[in-house]
Length: 101
Image (cartoon, rainbow, N blue to C red; front, side, top):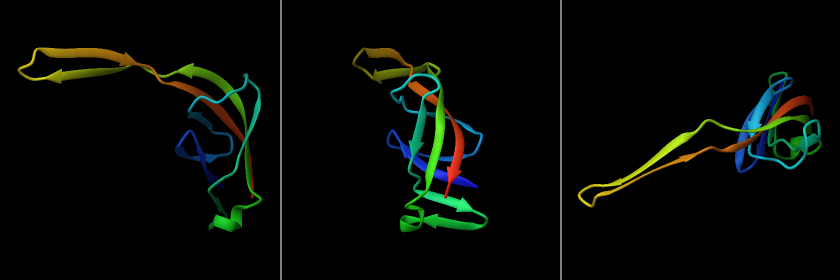
């Protein structure tokens, strides 16, 4: 059984027991979080729209952190313009405990 959840403007396919890195969520480590799924795949059938109105995806916050550094290089030819900056995205790791549908 798996579900599709949406958080932080992105969609994630999750299963029970999986750890997912999502955009930063408020809360301390061990705090329970709950999502309303967009779709649920259960025993060969896909539930979407009004069929998943009572479904919930429950999990706990496993950790907060920052991703790997990404180098951003800007360049304009013939203008002597070069700029290098780095970026590290914040994330929250969530351990999926239960998918109820």
